[in-house]
Amino acid sequence: VQLQASGGGLVQAGGSLRLSCTTSGGTFRNYVVGWFRQAPGKGREFVSAIRWSARYTYYSDSVKGRFTTSRGNAENSVYLQMNSLKPEDTAVYYCAASRSIIVSSYANEFGYNNWGQGTEVTVSS
Image (cartoon, rainbow, N blue to C red; front, side, top):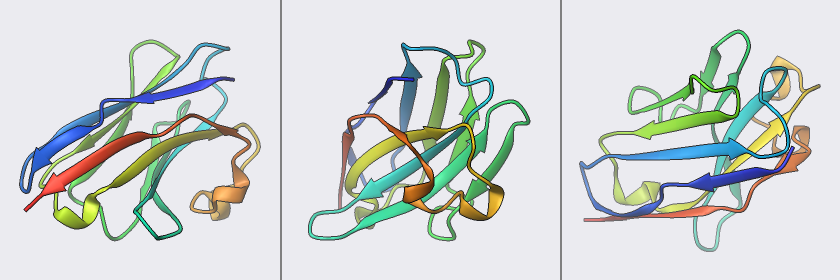
C-alpha cells in the first residue's frame, strides 16, 4: 500500500491537530497502522498504533491520554487526534503500515514495511 500523511501545521501549546493517513493502493483492513515522529536531531519515536480490523490501539507513554488514533469509516484512512499539544511534540510525523507485525513489535519502526512521507507539526510555546 502507498501511504500519505497529512494535516500537520503550526499550533500553539495546548492546541489540537488531527493528522490523517490515507492509502491509495488498497485498504487498511488487514493492517496495523503505526504513527511515528522524528524531532530535529533525534531518532524516530513511536507514537501510536491501531490494528484496523480490531480497533485495537496502543500508545507511547508520552502521548497517552492526549492523543487518540482511530480508523475512518472508509477502509483507507486512519487518524491521529492530538490534543493538549506541547512544544516537545514538535516533529515530523509519519504513518506506517504492516500486515504481519506482531503486538510486541508495534512500537518498533523496523516492523513496518510501508511508510508514507511525513507531515510536519510545530507547537509553539
